[in-house]
Length: 205
Image (cartoon, rainbow, N blue to C red):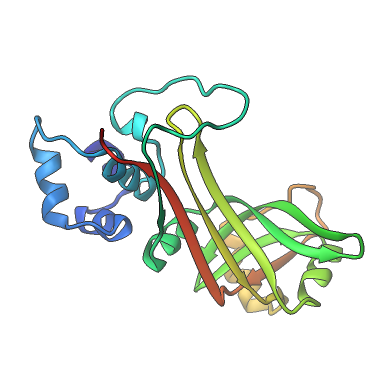
C-alpha cells in the first residue's frame, strides 16, 4: 500500500479520508509486516488508491471473459459522498447518459472533476443536446471479474456548455479531448445535484 500511496503522492490521512477509515489503523497496517485486512477493507483501500485488491497484495491475474459471478459472501454497500467524490476526483473515462428522440443513450468521454463539476469534451451537437435537457447522468465504475468485486458512482444534474474564454483557458491545462478527435469540440460541465455510489465487497468466511 505504501508504494502505491507514494506513487499517487497521497498522505495516510488523505487515503484514510477517501476510504472512510481511521488514519491510525492504516499507519499500523503499513508498518506491521504481519498485519492482515479483511476482503472488504482491502477493497475500500483499493478504491481509494485507484487500483485493485490483487495489485495491493502484489499480484495480478488475467481477467476472464464472460459474465461476472458473485463471490461466496458478497455484500453490497453504499459509498459515502466523500468516497464518491474521491472516485470522481481520480478522473479518467466515464459515460454521459442522456435522452434523444429514439430514447436514452450512453456516450464514453474523457473527464476530470474540478471545482465541483464533471468536465468533459464532446462535439458541438452533443454539447447543445446536453445543455437543453433538465437533467443528465454521468456514471463511472470499475469491475474486477477475477475477484467478483467492483464499484460504481452515478452523478446526476444539469449540464452546461462552457463558453467563457477565461474558464476555457483555465480548463485547457486538463488536456481533455473528445473521443471522436478533431478540432471541433466543446467543453461541458455537469454539477452533481445527486451523487450515489455502491461497492461490492466480500465478508470473510
